[in-house]
Amino acid sequence: MEKLLEYKIMPRLMMLVMTVMYIRVIEWFMNLSAADMTSQAAALTATVTGAMTGAFAVWLGSEK
Image: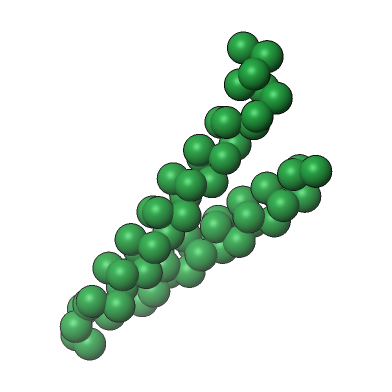
């Protein structure tokens, strides 16, 4: 258990998962047709982007 805490496996794994999902959302949005690009799709993409930005800032602030 000490090694898991020492290597910070869980925060790094969570950041990796968030990064992969962020890339998937961006790919999904870019593959939408012009008719399918609704305000709801743009809001979802903006929300995921904001969450990723916040998580990245927290992660960078805690890595020392």
